[in-house]
Length: 412
Ligand code: AMP
Ligand code: MG
Image 1 (cartoon, rainbow, N blue to C red):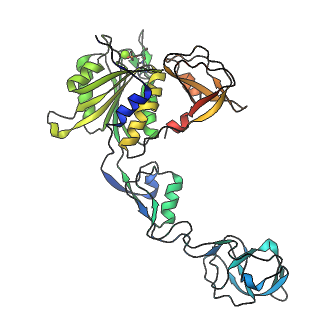
Image 2 (cartoon, rainbow, N blue to C red):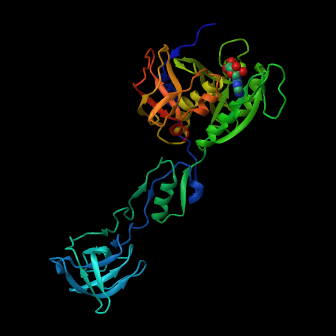
């Protein structure tokens, strides 16, 4: 059997992303249901935010020209709490004003109450500073302008985006429909937690890791369960998975041994590229598409086959499946945020492959390494806060700055 081509992580990612296209369908959902979704259309503000010039402080609205020097006393001519409108401010008077209240016409500055002395008997206030025109005034429309774009299509909606849309006066948002992903897990050795393990059996951990990854990314995930290491069973599962899904992901069976049926099964039901990626953990990754029916008009579902080892499938999901899904969702599939952080460990046996080491931030602002970096040891990922992206053939010495990618940045 010919060996699959060896690609760098970047080549594999470029190849994947050159195929992915954003789903077209849009749905309108109430604001809270839009959390974690992708905005499908620009949001234009219905109003100016703030709607009027208003005060950023509790204090007194004044005409700055009335107070050339500190110590000037002014008559308190009106009181303007938030939510009510004042009247034009006469020269030589001040308006008692509270945060968020509109600055009355004629006033051009607010003096915070800490800089004023109230003389309650006379109904006067002494202004102990010389105000600068404009001070403590929040301008109408300085946040958003009516009719202008407040949020752009493709934005991933976090709590703060929902707040911006609400401030713009919207009740509902147009979002992309969720990306639908089917997942199944190959391996005769696999059992579900709760079942008893037969000799040689292990629990299926990839199911929970990968379904939760899909959930974190806001996908609609369908679990098609454990599929035995047989060609017919794998083909059946693929046919089932291709219906009503944009993407199929699987774990295991992507090597080219005789127990690995992903390659022949996907080739029979669609088309497949099998790659060796020069990364560790990881290595084999399958990418292709599965026909939705015999009628070509029905199209295809994308297929990504991950390796079976629990750390490999987790890491390859984060590095390759995540950006592919981001692009299907209509989001920008940019590289994850990374930081240069000091390694507080040695990693002298550099590999020919690009390694992704499981590390944890320590209380000295450096990184510690999980001692067992085997691709079967999933506790390394749960102990860790993220990955160090270690270039090929590059040993790490304690004190070196290394490229650190937090898991948090990869799970949203
Ligand atoms: P494979 O890629 O199918 O050759 O599997 C590689 C290794 O990963 C083997 O030790 C499998 O037992 C293990 N493995 C495969 N699938 C899973 C799974 N869903 N959960 C946990 N371990 C798995
Ligand atoms: Mg297997």
